[in-house]
Length: 326
Image (tube, rainbow, N blue to C red; front, side, top):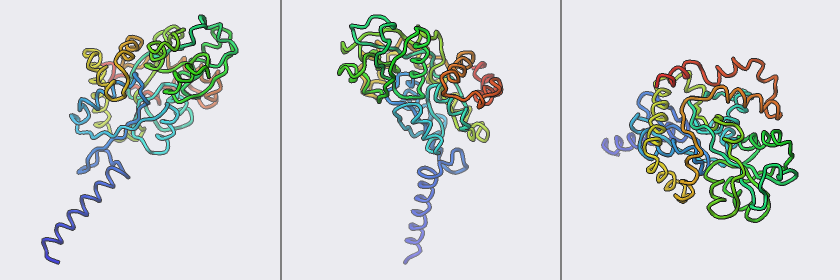
């Protein structure tokens, strides 16, 4: 074998080796000489996660030297399972699955808020008030989601009891149309989908239940937070840039979401104003959710003996200070 061929073979082996180690196996984020590949999770057609889709589509990650791989999940608990199994480096998820995960000792840190509010309870047309749901079947995107938690809050607030039935979020409008459920609660744009298609009407929004409540958050692994401060700051910059872009360019942001999810613009436009875009976490709302989840038996009280300490580990003070300055 000639020397030239030997050199070619060696180069090919080196390239393939770095590719498989850096991308498929190791994802050695920020290591010298290795391409940054960040695995970020998000939820199926979740309008709340538009900042991620905008950042991905507009090349904001590439501008920071980060190659991003997006991974979609049916709901927050499914994403958290993947994260805890080492399949993700970061993600966009509801505050409820994030809190449940942290209480169980999963090593994640909330980097920023994504949005406040943005969910709604829709019912068949013959039901007019929340009280009429007593004894009825209500669909949710799954146990451990923020929507399931909100449904429990609705039950207590209106002194009713409903049958919780879990579905893939995209199947909820179908379940209502087929009369498998009397109502459902979901993230936008799925509630608006039922309205536009004439299946049902919005009975109440999450604003009506808990005004200005924390909804989705952007989190990273504790390892990134502790060992990759430069990368962490880049991620914060990308996230905030995306939110500011959405606020200033709502028409283009809606178009991007539509193109990347297949959801019609009419449905997205009808959903949009139910969401408050805010990268600063609502700490008091998060504190309230901790109490709700303990009350609902989704978090054990003994797992959060000191709420202030828990919150500081979940959303460290230095990150809160950084967000406050931006």
